[in-house]
Structures are given as structure tokens and as C-alpha cells.
Image 1 (spheres, rainbow, N blue to C red):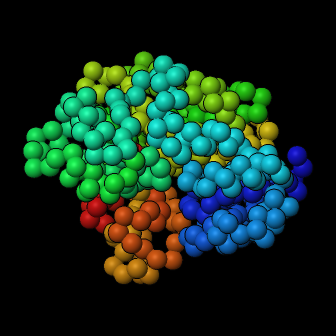
Image 2: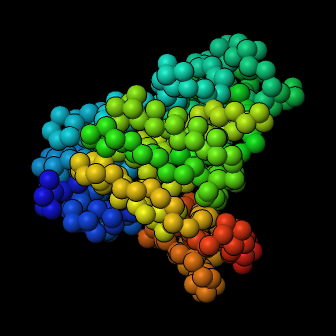
Length: 379
Ligand code: ADP
Ligand code: MG
């Protein structure tokens, strides 16, 4: 591919923005079809289509302009991904994305590969929910099969919650088809960002240790404070998934670590991942550059961690008003702290507005710097 190659990106969020940033730096052009998402991501692309995903004219323009396409968000209509795939190569493949879009397909795929997941049952009504609750003892979490992110579409049902019958829980959940998952007593949560190139080469970054608040990623700590053996095991599983999906591109694999140090896969994301944002400042190759390399048929880049890093997500909660930016001067005074804002015009509680990565010679220093930032902003 020459440098005039144009990459088509479906979706218009921050992941697309950071991808466009690296792609353009590397000499590619980018056309982004946001589907109507006005997030500020598109401002970094060469061409932007803000039409909804059912627009015929946008479809033609997108597929006439781009020589290849990728998704920056998995909840793009699979019909559209399929259709784009009839005109230009889509990486990762429609099939891989559709597995990641649907929690039932995802879990069944992992099971078919003998990769451990949480116990689960798929339910379609109050009666199948009642049976599932009998089969899975203890606390469970109900999740929508599709379109969930940042904990949206989830309901925790406690074992000792005798107030609710299955019919009432079904009603409260909204009468949706759902997956019922055993709630794991987590020792920790990890993720591995990995990638597979067009020639089948696979690479994995060092696992990140992730802490969530209200089901939303709060901080990612790298290197994760786990044994070398667990780290290797997680990387091996992540690479195996990319192989069995015949995947091309960057894949984010989320793990639960249970009380016995056993790894269970929570979910997989067919794209760069929030817990891989530290790679921009702390690794030899960022996960976004890696995505460009993989889908454009370049050799994959080194995943080496140059310095320990802690990434802190910045949510809209710290904006005093939807369009009033917080004062960032405290961050700029901290050595090794890097602010990344996503250009979103309106802040809302829970909305990801940016992140900060603190790198330092030791993990303790990076953790201390993030703790100081959290204190300043009351988060
Ligand atoms: P999302 O698509 O919103 O990221 P996840 O399934 O990853 O959904 O859930 C978000 C977070 O909720 C997880 O990272 C974890 O902290 C918690 N969680 C989800 N499922 C379970 C489970 N079965 N047991 C324990 N915690 C869970
Ligand atoms: Mg998740």
C-alpha cells in the first residue's frame, strides 16, 4: 500500500480519534463515518461522514474513498460491516466482530476453544431466568446480549435478595434476552492487548491490572502486580484467541482473576482498548499504531514497556458545567503526567472525556502521582 492509502473507520469515538492521529502521522489518509456521533473524533480525520449508518450516499462515499476499513467500536450494525466488506477489505473480519458483538456468541466461541469463562446461561423469558437462577448458585449478573458497554445494560442479583421473584427481576431488567453470569469474587481484573498481522504473526503487550468504579474502568496499572507465570498465561490465551479467530488487527482481552488465581475471560473487544491507552506514552508502539500496522499489512511493532505506567480515565463528573473545562494546570506540573483529551464538546457524568497517563521510573512513583491527581480533582 502506498502512502495515499485511505483507511475507512466506522464509528466516531475517542478510539477512532486516537487511531486517526497515528494513521495520519504514519502517512495514511483517514475517512471516518461517525453514524451521527458528534464526539470530536472526526475532527482528526481527513474526511468525515456524519450521516446515520443507513445512509446510502455515505455508504458509497465511504467505500469509494477508503481502500480498507476497520471498526473503532464493536456496536456498529453487523449488516453494514458485512456490506462494506463486499466492496473493500474489512479488518478485523465481520465474523470476528460479530462474535465480539454478542455475549452469547462470544462465550460459546470461547467455550469451543476450551478457554475458561464465567458460568453462564442464556435466558429469553421469566421462566428460563428462574431455571438459570437455580442452576447458578450465589450472586449473578444479568447482562444484555448486545450493545452493552461501561456496565450499561447490567443488573446485579444478589443471592440473599429474596424480595424479587424471577418474574420481577425479568421485569426490572426490561424483558430483554440476557446472559446470566455467575458473579466472580474477583481478586483482580487484567487485560491483554494483543494483535495479529496479515501474515499471522501475533504479539501481546504486558497485561494491565484494571480497577473499575461503577463498572467503568478507572485506572490501569502496568506492569500488573501479578506473577510472571500468570502474566505469561494471560498473554498466551490472548494470542490463542487471535489465532482461532483468524484475526487481523488489535484485540483487547479482559480477564477476571478469581480467588484461586485462575484466569477467566470476561469479554473480548475487536479493537484497541481503554486499558491499552498507556501504550501511547509508555510503550515502543502504541496500540493505535499497532492497529494501523496490522490492517495495512506492515510488520507489527515492538510491545516493549519503556517505563511503568498508570492510566487514569477522566470522566465528565469533574466538569463544573457541561462545557466548562476543569483547570489542568496541576497535571502539567507533575513529571511524566500526560493529558489526553478527546475533544468532546459536552461533558456528562460517566462520559469518558479523556485520560491521563503517568509514567515514572518505578511503578510506586506512577501510582503516587495518580493518587495525587485523584486527590486534586476529588476522584
Ligand atoms: P462492559 O461491556 O460494560 O465492559 P463487562 O462485562 O466487562 O461489561 O462488565 C463491566 C465490569 O463489571 C467488569 O469489568 C467487572 O468489574 C464487573 N463484572 C462484570 N461481570 C462480572 C462477573 N461475572 N463477576 C464479577 N464482576 C463482574
Ligand atoms: Mg468490559
